[in-house]
Image 1 (cartoon, rainbow over the protein chains, first blue to last red):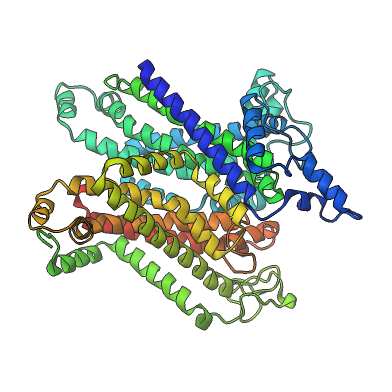
Image 2: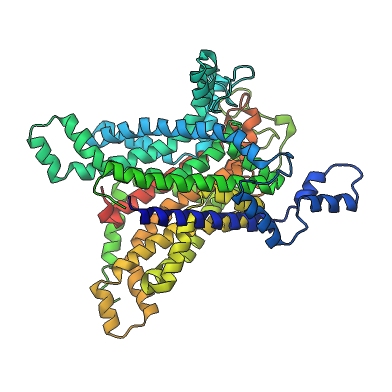
Length: 336
Length: 292
């Protein structure tokens, strides 16, 4: 990993964040709805002075470039502004909601790898067999189904009809573990709270399945095709003819090389996992950043939307840098 | 065309090869059915999609003895006919899917052709812009844009094009970069053809097949996006029956009326599945390099 590469990557990251900030800022300011109107709507006896005062309070009377300057200089100082609607610092809101989103995304990702990698390997080793066809067929169904619909089907089957799993939220009142990291699963393990662990796990299963379905379908598809390409190469024949066991050839010689394209795609598709997160949070009333952003867009709560979008973009760019790093771990030939 | 590799016989042969694969044929048939449904929805539907009969609220369909006569797939919370609304829902999905993909091809395809062909500064600028745009997670971008534009069919097509052109740009740029070095392009230069005619009359026909495959597969993705945005309340305007918004509206009634989310979802599922099957089939036939 050369320093030059890291610097280039870092400059790109800053550039992207600036671009996204500017874009988000611009598009929210040209939008037709007025936050002051929305906030005062339905309240009795509003005078023009009230509206004027509120507009001034929120800084919306200032020219566009001043507003941008105020926001950008705030971001640099770590101050993301103040929510118009919830009357609280945006940073507090994000800090509160972030663990829920992180927990969901993390477990969905783990689940997709745990499912996607083995079935990708099996499908490639048993190419054109019944198992392969079945896996690829299911895969096809998986990528043709919108995740929110799959989530609703899961709710209907497991919550409404079988009544075995909860439909919404992260846990139930009174069963939250002591707050340490905000990740309920981790916190309940750290505090040795078995009951909280089970409750959190039960809440996590359905959203994870809904979010992970599409992702694991993509992972297994890519892995299968790159495995097939590698399994037909000379050095695999050499390894086999040396008398190595089939499992060793597949797992040590083929899989390691097949992981590179999979990691690339996993990184690229991380964006869809982030997007999927927003949608799935809405389906399962998951109190994360996604549902916060959706609510804030409808309320025209500019500071929250801006901060939320920048946060997700930052995560996305960071994931892509991690993907680059992962290449060097998997394939020592690659050096940046 | 100077060194064209396409001919009438090849086209026919490809089409016959396409018909040999049963899953592709299945995809094609489903797609044709959905298309005809969308076109003839007013003739096929037995009710008004926007008008309900409150006396027949949340009635099941043909599978139950409680069903109201004449409502094959039951009714929704306002007593509207589910079958009618599912049929009409295909219009939104296909219109938005087709419109957004077509616009994306026009924008992305043209830019990609030019960038790959002329290279230089033009290519640099656009490629860099694309890199930056791709750092924006797609759904987040769409939610933001639709949140600002407000619901509406044309807004939706516009928003989906804003990022939908990128895959077409990337594909065509890459294809043109390799095509422009080939002998038939050189031959075209040699006989004095100008850049535009080489681009559109020589190179474009030769890379058309990859474009068709990508367009088919993209349409499935765009339809899922449309449904997702409609589900979030950011899609078409609320009184237009769209599959995504029908599923969203059904959320409060899941316990008593399973058919409310199931049928519109099946609509999305089969439409996207048919496009994916057709796209894969086309890829196998038209793009042998990618055949696995």
